Length: 403
Figure 1 (cartoon, rainbow, N blue to C red):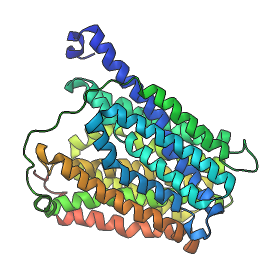
Figure 2: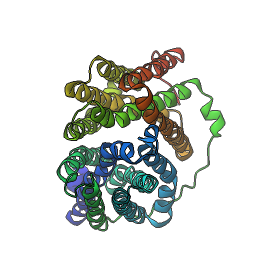
Figure 3: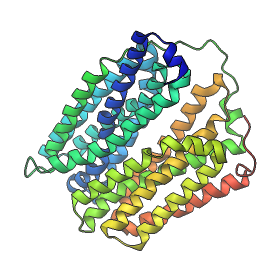
Figure 4: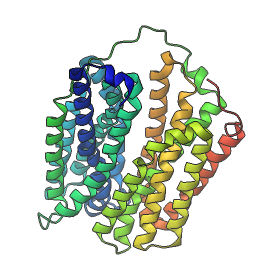
């Protein structure tokens, strides 16, 4: 326990711990929403879509929902407090499950896409849990609070796929119908957990707006950082979206696809406890390069075979690569803005990342159905090489970027 924690009144310390504990539990519950969508939406889309090239469209719509609702959820949190944003998110989570279940029962592809859009809105709110945890505690304990919430993300990676495995056949002949009802119930439980979180309404900044976005965005190393983050997330999403459906098309079981996705999500979040220390030691650009190499290795493994082991190793390497690539790139972006510029710079970064990530989601279904799993893996290589070359060309690997 830190010295500042020892000096806090017991009631205040208990309040802080209670808030963090609720956010950890909520992260485990709400984070499962995304893994359920990724594990099932491609398979359901392949069954219901009027054209098989649209099989992964529900996942793309999920990403659209996340991108479209990130800023509105932040506005609600700033205007009415984080708890209001949290509860609105769980409402979207409940609608996700109910609408998706109804779509499966009716065999309606477009209704199913509407359900996954609400799932994206829920995911946008979940992104803020780690920042809320940091607000719960004193500055010297923020890293520990964020790490605790990240641990909840690891649990989400287990809960989601296991929920799919144990519920997908409970309502024959409607595959995953019971899964989506369970998803809605999990969102309701999450709302009960979050209703007890007590956080102050964020104060509005009174500082200036800083430099213009154009002035910040034209810096070569800033461009290299954003590009690295975009490609890390885009290629991860491209391969991850295709993998569960590719496994089914290769004759492998849904249970194996669920387990592969489970270990992928764990690999995405587990390294977060040490990624910050590694960045401090060797620098963010080098960590990004490690991430890009790991993602390229994932694609290479995917090209060597279509057994369960090949898919699982691909997904684990993909998760590890995303962690190093995206977190390293995000750290680089932070180096280019001042305190008063953070909201607009981070919003710009997120808009570009999620906007281009949508393109990867839309492309994955068409690539997989038209050219097969191997083409999905081959397409991943050139952008990764381009991101690495840009980091080198801008000098990010040789000299630390200055603000």
